[in-house]
Image (tube, rainbow, N blue to C red; front, side, top):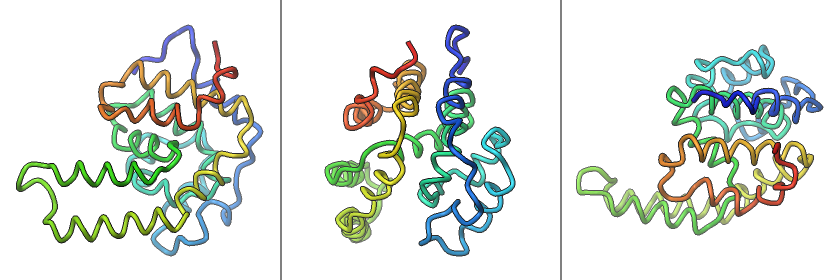
Length: 203
Protein backbone atom coordinates (compact mmCIF):
# COMPACT_ATOMS: atom_id res chain seq x y z
CA UNK A 1 0.00 0.00 0.00
CA UNK A 2 1.20 3.51 -0.81
CA UNK A 3 0.67 5.69 2.26
CA UNK A 4 -1.43 8.74 1.28
CA UNK A 5 0.84 11.83 1.14
CA UNK A 6 -1.63 13.91 3.17
CA UNK A 7 -1.60 11.51 6.09
CA UNK A 8 1.74 10.48 7.50
CA UNK A 9 0.63 7.41 9.35
CA UNK A 10 4.14 6.39 10.33
CA UNK A 11 4.64 9.64 12.23
CA UNK A 12 1.13 9.38 13.64
CA UNK A 13 1.66 5.87 15.01
CA UNK A 14 5.11 6.42 16.49
CA UNK A 15 4.25 9.80 18.00
CA UNK A 16 1.15 8.39 19.66
CA UNK A 17 3.17 5.66 21.41
CA UNK A 18 6.33 7.72 21.98
CA UNK A 19 5.93 7.67 25.76
CA UNK A 20 6.00 3.88 25.91
CA UNK A 21 9.38 2.75 27.27
CA UNK A 22 11.38 0.02 25.64
CA UNK A 23 10.73 -3.11 27.70
CA UNK A 24 13.44 -4.97 29.55
CA UNK A 25 14.26 -8.46 28.28
CA UNK A 26 12.27 -9.87 31.20
CA UNK A 27 9.20 -7.86 30.11
CA UNK A 28 9.06 -8.98 26.48
CA UNK A 29 7.20 -12.28 26.75
CA UNK A 30 4.33 -13.44 28.92
CA UNK A 31 5.39 -15.47 31.93
CA UNK A 32 3.66 -18.58 30.54
CA UNK A 33 5.98 -18.66 27.50
CA UNK A 34 8.83 -21.15 27.75
CA UNK A 35 11.90 -21.87 25.63
CA UNK A 36 9.90 -21.76 22.40
CA UNK A 37 9.94 -17.98 22.75
CA UNK A 38 13.71 -17.59 23.00
CA UNK A 39 14.23 -16.50 19.38
CA UNK A 40 11.46 -13.92 19.60
CA UNK A 41 12.77 -12.61 22.92
CA UNK A 42 16.27 -12.24 21.49
CA UNK A 43 15.00 -10.41 18.41
CA UNK A 44 12.93 -7.91 20.36
CA UNK A 45 15.54 -7.44 23.07
CA UNK A 46 18.16 -6.43 20.50
CA UNK A 47 16.02 -4.21 18.24
CA UNK A 48 14.05 -1.05 18.83
CA UNK A 49 10.58 -0.67 17.38
CA UNK A 50 11.98 1.31 14.43
CA UNK A 51 14.58 -1.36 13.62
CA UNK A 52 12.25 -4.29 12.98
CA UNK A 53 12.21 -5.37 9.35
CA UNK A 54 9.46 -6.95 7.30
CA UNK A 55 11.56 -10.11 7.31
CA UNK A 56 11.67 -10.06 11.13
CA UNK A 57 7.91 -9.70 11.33
CA UNK A 58 7.25 -12.45 8.82
CA UNK A 59 9.73 -15.00 10.15
CA UNK A 60 9.78 -14.44 13.92
CA UNK A 61 6.84 -12.33 15.09
CA UNK A 62 4.16 -13.80 12.82
CA UNK A 63 2.31 -16.55 14.64
CA UNK A 64 3.72 -15.45 17.98
CA UNK A 65 1.88 -12.26 18.91
CA UNK A 66 0.15 -14.18 21.68
CA UNK A 67 3.52 -14.52 23.41
CA UNK A 68 4.06 -10.79 23.90
CA UNK A 69 3.64 -9.28 27.34
CA UNK A 70 1.57 -6.08 27.51
CA UNK A 71 4.63 -3.80 27.80
CA UNK A 72 6.27 -5.27 24.71
CA UNK A 73 3.06 -5.36 22.70
CA UNK A 74 2.42 -1.66 23.30
CA UNK A 75 6.02 -0.64 22.63
CA UNK A 76 6.28 -2.48 19.30
CA UNK A 77 2.69 -1.83 18.21
CA UNK A 78 3.41 1.29 16.10
CA UNK A 79 5.92 -0.74 14.08
CA UNK A 80 3.34 -3.49 13.63
CA UNK A 81 0.67 -1.01 12.52
CA UNK A 82 2.81 0.82 10.00
CA UNK A 83 4.43 -2.28 8.49
CA UNK A 84 1.00 -3.86 8.10
CA UNK A 85 -0.07 -0.99 5.85
CA UNK A 86 3.20 -0.30 4.08
CA UNK A 87 4.09 -3.94 3.33
CA UNK A 88 0.69 -5.61 3.30
CA UNK A 89 1.37 -7.97 0.36
CA UNK A 90 4.32 -9.48 2.24
CA UNK A 91 2.60 -9.48 5.63
CA UNK A 92 -1.03 -10.36 4.94
CA UNK A 93 -0.98 -13.35 7.31
CA UNK A 94 0.65 -11.25 10.03
CA UNK A 95 -1.92 -8.50 9.46
CA UNK A 96 -4.78 -10.96 9.98
CA UNK A 97 -3.14 -12.08 13.20
CA UNK A 98 -2.70 -8.47 14.32
CA UNK A 99 -6.35 -7.69 13.60
CA UNK A 100 -7.26 -10.68 15.75
CA UNK A 101 -5.05 -9.42 18.57
CA UNK A 102 -6.73 -6.00 18.32
CA UNK A 103 -10.22 -7.50 18.52
CA UNK A 104 -11.85 -7.89 21.93
CA UNK A 105 -12.49 -11.64 22.18
CA UNK A 106 -16.00 -13.05 22.10
CA UNK A 107 -17.19 -16.62 22.58
CA UNK A 108 -19.41 -16.14 19.55
CA UNK A 109 -16.33 -15.51 17.40
CA UNK A 110 -14.88 -18.85 18.43
CA UNK A 111 -18.11 -20.72 17.69
CA UNK A 112 -18.61 -19.04 14.31
CA UNK A 113 -15.02 -19.69 13.21
CA UNK A 114 -15.34 -23.35 14.12
CA UNK A 115 -18.70 -23.59 12.37
CA UNK A 116 -17.16 -22.15 9.19
CA UNK A 117 -14.45 -24.79 9.38
CA UNK A 118 -17.07 -27.55 9.42
CA UNK A 119 -18.59 -26.18 6.20
CA UNK A 120 -15.40 -26.47 4.16
CA UNK A 121 -15.63 -28.77 1.11
CA UNK A 122 -14.78 -32.41 1.69
CA UNK A 123 -11.04 -32.94 1.75
CA UNK A 124 -10.20 -29.39 2.79
CA UNK A 125 -11.36 -29.43 6.38
CA UNK A 126 -10.33 -31.49 9.39
CA UNK A 127 -11.87 -34.90 10.16
CA UNK A 128 -14.98 -34.66 12.32
CA UNK A 129 -13.29 -36.04 15.42
CA UNK A 130 -10.43 -33.55 15.17
CA UNK A 131 -12.88 -30.71 14.59
CA UNK A 132 -14.77 -31.60 17.75
CA UNK A 133 -11.54 -31.85 19.73
CA UNK A 134 -10.50 -28.43 18.44
CA UNK A 135 -13.91 -27.02 19.35
CA UNK A 136 -13.59 -28.36 22.89
CA UNK A 137 -10.05 -26.98 23.30
CA UNK A 138 -10.86 -23.55 21.87
CA UNK A 139 -13.99 -23.09 23.95
CA UNK A 140 -12.22 -24.23 27.11
CA UNK A 141 -9.44 -21.72 26.38
CA UNK A 142 -11.93 -18.90 25.96
CA UNK A 143 -13.97 -19.92 29.00
CA UNK A 144 -10.81 -19.86 31.12
CA UNK A 145 -10.92 -16.07 30.80
CA UNK A 146 -7.34 -15.86 29.53
CA UNK A 147 -8.04 -14.37 26.07
CA UNK A 148 -10.11 -11.53 27.53
CA UNK A 149 -7.55 -10.93 30.25
CA UNK A 150 -4.73 -10.66 27.69
CA UNK A 151 -6.71 -8.18 25.61
CA UNK A 152 -7.57 -5.91 28.52
CA UNK A 153 -4.07 -6.08 30.01
CA UNK A 154 -2.72 -4.80 26.70
CA UNK A 155 -5.23 -2.10 25.88
CA UNK A 156 -7.19 -0.79 28.87
CA UNK A 157 -4.35 1.56 29.83
CA UNK A 158 -4.00 3.18 26.40
CA UNK A 159 -4.07 6.95 26.15
CA UNK A 160 -6.69 8.61 23.94
CA UNK A 161 -3.98 9.41 21.37
CA UNK A 162 -2.90 5.76 21.24
CA UNK A 163 -6.46 4.55 20.86
CA UNK A 164 -7.09 7.11 18.13
CA UNK A 165 -3.99 5.95 16.26
CA UNK A 166 -5.24 2.36 16.31
CA UNK A 167 -8.59 3.52 14.98
CA UNK A 168 -6.74 5.37 12.19
CA UNK A 169 -5.03 2.08 11.38
CA UNK A 170 -8.35 0.28 11.01
CA UNK A 171 -9.73 3.00 8.76
CA UNK A 172 -6.65 2.88 6.51
CA UNK A 173 -6.70 -0.92 6.41
CA UNK A 174 -10.40 -0.94 5.53
CA UNK A 175 -9.86 1.54 2.71
CA UNK A 176 -6.93 -0.35 1.22
CA UNK A 177 -7.67 -4.01 1.93
CA UNK A 178 -11.17 -4.32 3.33
CA UNK A 179 -12.09 -6.88 0.68
CA UNK A 180 -9.61 -9.29 2.25
CA UNK A 181 -11.73 -9.39 5.43
CA UNK A 182 -15.04 -10.76 4.10
CA UNK A 183 -16.54 -11.64 7.48
CA UNK A 184 -16.54 -8.05 8.72
CA UNK A 185 -13.50 -8.55 10.94
CA UNK A 186 -12.39 -4.92 10.76
CA UNK A 187 -15.83 -3.49 11.52
CA UNK A 188 -16.28 -5.94 14.39
CA UNK A 189 -12.98 -4.92 15.97
CA UNK A 190 -13.84 -1.23 15.72
CA UNK A 191 -17.44 -1.50 16.90
CA UNK A 192 -16.56 -3.76 19.79
CA UNK A 193 -13.82 -1.60 21.31
CA UNK A 194 -12.03 1.06 19.24
CA UNK A 195 -14.99 3.22 18.27
CA UNK A 196 -14.73 4.87 21.69
CA UNK A 197 -11.63 6.69 20.39
CA UNK A 198 -13.32 8.27 17.38
CA UNK A 199 -12.88 11.79 18.78
CA UNK A 200 -9.11 11.24 18.94
CA UNK A 201 -8.53 10.22 15.33
CA UNK A 202 -6.14 12.20 13.13
CA UNK A 203 -8.61 14.12 10.99
